Picture 1 (tube, helix red, strand yellow):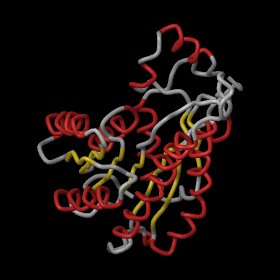
Picture 2 (cartoon, rainbow, N blue to C red; picture 1 turned 45 degrees about the horizontal axis):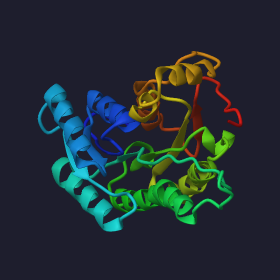
Picture 3 (cartoon, rainbow, N blue to C red; picture 1 turned 180 degrees about the horizontal axis):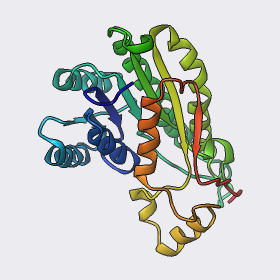
Picture 4 (tube, helix red, strand yellow; picture 1 turned 90 degrees about the horizontal axis):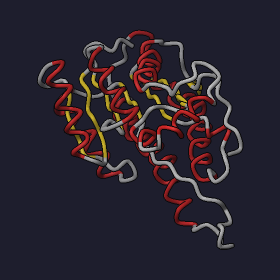
Length: 261
């Protein structure tokens, strides 16, 4: 699918990997809806994109991916401004780490595990199902394609560390959902792929002390630095434009394999 002139939804677009992806798609000529639970962040990114690439290129939408009504309203607002979206870049998610048995000897709270699963896994499915239902109604393009979805997992889906049970399970669920969803939506001409990033220079990562960031970067075989949001965005854009990429989970990690802790 060519990106130029198409409409895209980017969840988590107000910061980090989502912001980088929203900016890259706009640079490549897409109309971008920046969806984020933090409306101020989404508005900041959309305003900067519009200042750079022209008024009307980006739209900010407040969106809770775990809430069907909130998500549907954002999809409809984006369609009213840019036309129906053919691209979904789903990057919104949360991280958490908690040992099963804490230092106090008590079991980890079940609600903490449930929250991560709800946001990262159920939120992904919720976003996918609503986007797919709208996209399936569009006219087919080349090769019968109607749209493409790119999900975000993590290397923690495969190399989860101590305390990452909830996060790893949620991201492994996203990875495991990729192929069956691609098979399910093949009849509608909608492709599905997932990126599993390693250690990236996101706002959350930058809150860590510089010594910690340097130590993490040194654990990456090559290049020994944190990944850049624009590198994630470049891969996401390539998935959109490469029509034979479907049902695949792609690690983007500099050959990193996470240690137990």
